[in-house]
Image (tube, rainbow, N blue to C red):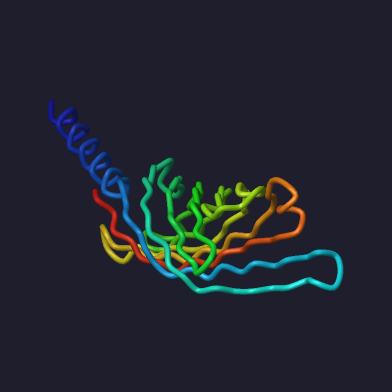
Length: 167
């Protein structure tokens, strides 16, 4: 009976520590969107705009050192409002520090005739300040964009943000 009680307490402790890392999060911060236009000639251009993002996600604990976090983020930059859907795999270097990588869908919410949907490869890092608060930095590199617009334009994004996870 004593062993059963110890096993029960141990199972509760493990479940509590795992659920403390898992949960819904809200996040916001600054982003810098770089647009490179390559027409193959005279009209090539590059521009970078500073803006902000806001959104949320849910952190799923896959193992002691590995999490997966899909998010839904709205990006507001001067003339390029977008919806980002990153699905980040997080490898925990320590209890507080993680590195992240994964695909990121971006959808331009502007009135464009073609090329609204893009796929990025995103990578970055995160730091868990306490049980609830965290900070992240991430860079997304466009690897694909639909339509004729996608052949001419590369859109890359740097995000720096903070968030609060509800446990």
